[in-house]
Structures are given as structure tokens and as C-alpha cells.
Length: 268
Image (cartoon, rainbow, N blue to C red):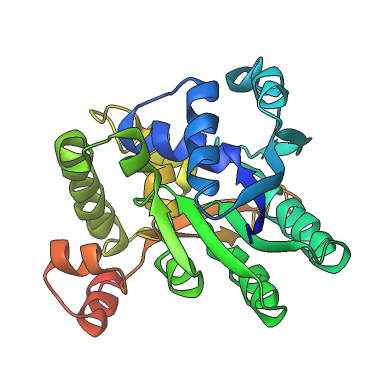
């Protein structure tokens, strides 16, 4: 008996992950078709939803492409911070819709999540308690390894699109290593903190796309962001950034263990 499948697509996550990591932008129709074809391997797709801020210029016409392919568009408002980082609540909206479906549609056996954020782990655990199968499709470079561990199967979008990461990422990897080295020097100096806006606008000269590089480093948890109180405008704290000493690439570039990295990055 064929299983019924519900498909949930965090479209912005996929779009920006592909653009920031591979500088590639695919036609929405092609991307959606490939995702649906992969989801149909699990069974009959009886419901499909895609989440994005459709007011953004990058997604002009996307709603029409989705509707032509029987995918319901779900608008999610996004917020752009002073540092240029844009965030939305797609993962929250996606989780709420999936949980509602879990309680109202007993006929759906499998949930296919197109995403990459580890915040969806709790959703997967909840679906598993109701004996639902959960498959994840995501960009391998930005999908949380913890998320992959919790799902039943994982498919990387690179393989669906025929992307060869080893050829495309050589320049980006070199920039990432340079970013780690530069930020390590700053952290071990006399600065109380390194502001994210300053890092992007002033300290990454010579990089092809500093904003995309920073977004990738944050999504891969190479960098960690945190808030610093702003004495002049308390309502607008400064976003600061620091290296994650637990990350394998940080340890590899700086040549040390987690403890050695912590000492090195604190200037001791």
C-alpha cells in the first residue's frame, strides 16, 4: 500500500544556501520539480508547502511557480538587522504546520523536510513519537550534522542538482581559512569584541562576497554571534562575532585542540 507523504520546504534556506556556498541560483521550477521527485520516492505526495518571504525581490514570481506545481506558498515575514543579516521564522511556521498536521491527518505516514537548521530536531523527535517517518533534504554544506543524525534518511541537494562541491568550493574554502586566521588575530588582540558589521564592511577587504562568506560561516557554526550592550542605544545592542573553538575547521586552521583554541582565542 502506497504511503502518503507531506512535503515541507524552507525555500529561503535552500535558496540562500546554494547562492552563498556555490554562487548558484537555479530556476525555481527546476528546483521544486527535483525536490518533489525525490519526495515521491517515499510515496504519494498529498500535501506540499513552501515557506519564504515573497516580498523579497529574489522571489518575484515564485508563488506562481509553486502553485503551478501544486505546492502551497506560505508567506513568512523576514527582518533585516543593521548588520545586514536577514532572518525569518520559517522554521517556526514549518514546525507548527507539521505538528498540526500530525494531529489532524492520521493518513500521512512520512514527512519530508527540506531544511538545514538544527532547530527542527525537536519537530523530528515529536513526529517519531507518533511513528512517523522523517526524511530530510538539504544543502550538505549548511545542513546541521545533528539534524542529519535524527532523521531517518538524508538526501543532499547537491547530488540532485549535479553539483560537484570539490570543484566549486576551492575559492570559498580558501576565503574561509583566511577569515578564520584574520578573526583569530583580532580575538587575541586588545579589542573587547569584534562587531559583525565592522568585520563585514572593514576587515574583509579583498574577499569576493564578504556577506555571503559570513552567512556561510555562521550557518556552519564556524562563527558564533552574540549581543553586546550598546550604551548609546540600549534598544539596539551590537551584534558581535567570535570563532567557535569546537569546530573542526577552526582547530585544523589554527592547529590545536579545543582547550588550546580557547586559550589562544582569549589572548592568553
